[in-house]
Length: 91
Image 1 (cartoon, rainbow, N blue to C red):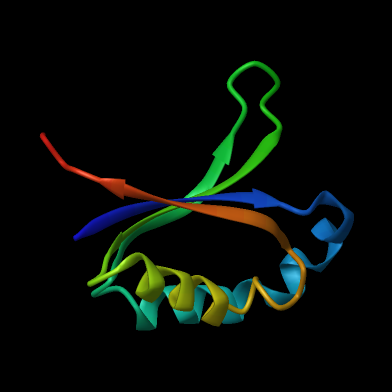
Image 2 (image 1 turned 180 degrees about the vertical axis):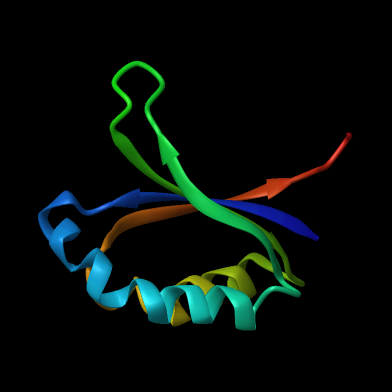
């Protein structure tokens, strides 16, 4: 099954991003079979950072949640929240 994960960043901890980015990117590369796309999103009106997006293949939403919580960004407080959505690719 495919899922989209929408992340809301925690702006209070934005200064920590550079410190954990290398570990985050290693994590994404090591999970590339399951996380087919990942990256930041921006507000189109302001150009301000608006969180992040992953496209994930997993057996269940619980598996996706476990993946999110294993990402080095999660325990550091860089992510404020996330939402797991079932996704169906049509094109």
